[in-house]
Image 1: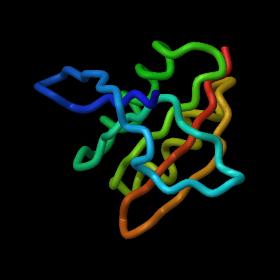
Image 2 (image 1 turned 180 degrees about the vertical axis):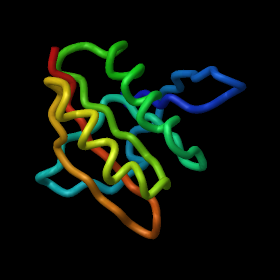
Image 3 (image 1 turned 120 degrees about the vertical axis):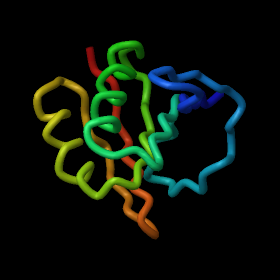
Length: 105
C-alpha cells in the first residue's frame, strides 16, 4: 500500500492510503511506499516537510515527493547530501518534479 501525505490544513499534514497504481513506473524504478504532495508550496515548505516526513519513516521505506517549486531541484539534493538518505531519482515532467528517496537510518 502506498501512503500519501497531503496538506489538509494550516501547518498540518495527513497520511492517506490506497494509492496503488496511480503512477506509471519503469521497471528500473523503485516503488514508493509513501508519497508527500507539496505541489503549490514554495521554499522552504517542500524541503522542511520532506525532512519532517523522512524522520517519521523507517529504514527501507521509499518516499516519493511531488513538488512544482523549481528551487527544489537545488534544495532537495542539498538536504539529502547532509543525511544518510539516498536520492534514487529525479523526474521533471511538465513542471511537476518527482523525487524518489530511500530512507536510510
